[in-house]
Length: 77
Image (cartoon, rainbow, N blue to C red; front, side, top):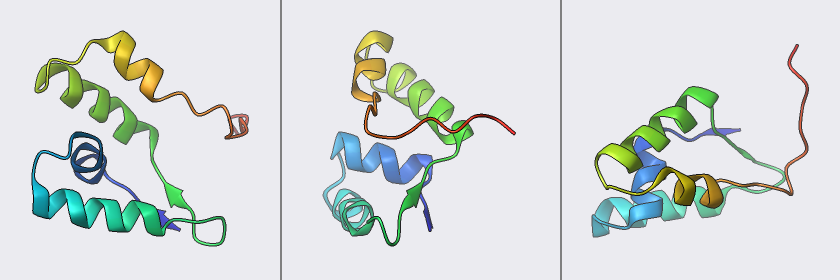
């Protein structure tokens, strides 16, 4: 399992630094069913904060982009 942090996700989504975006894209696109990526809840929270506060993206637009209907819900333990 590959852990994906906020910086990787921001570079992948924003594509604002060519070198870092290329590295982030390679890492994310390498994820598969056999070697999935993992995004911790705190990373998602930080991602929303960064996109909203640093890039001025509206929260509704961020929420729409983060919908993952194909991922099954796992109940909390």
